[in-house]
Image (cartoon, rainbow, N blue to C red; front, side, top):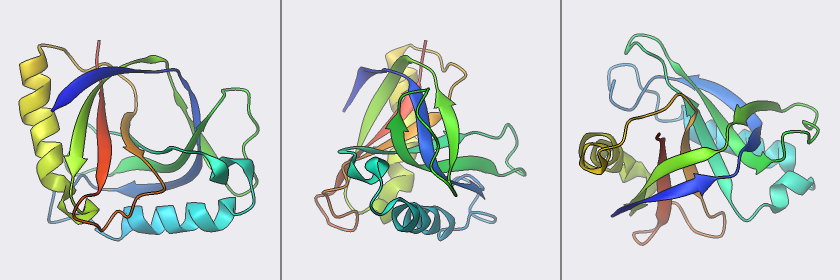
Amino acid sequence: MSEIINIPGGKIVGVRTSVFTIFNQDKYDPKAIPTAWQEFFAKSAGLEVAKSETFYGASIPSMSMDKPMEYFAGALVNSDAAVPSGMESVEIPQGAYLAVEHLGPITDIAASYQKAYMDALVASGKEMRTAPHLEIYNPALNPMADDYQMTIGVPIN
């Protein structure tokens, strides 16, 4: 199932890593993103960003399968918010996103990405816009549980 949601904009503050797309299995490092999240949680302990009810993974896609994308693990804050020491940020422009639900352990996310970009985006009739691609997480849920839910957000016009 997919729907169109509006993200208010701001910036994601957190930890940045470089990783090849999950669709490039020869170069994809399955530990890169979980490691970025572990680092974010360690660095944000006791800070306001750690109290967020929603966390975001933001991907800045590479236009080549042979070049890694940038991935930010963190929380969405106002554009004028200070970036905590030891963290980085990426601007998230306000706009529409095609939201596609992933259900099941986070380790099974590749099939949901396939569905988002190959099926749901095509069926929506929308075009991607230039903006970070998002993963939207509820931190209260266990990402390894069979009933885990999170959202893949494709920036659209």
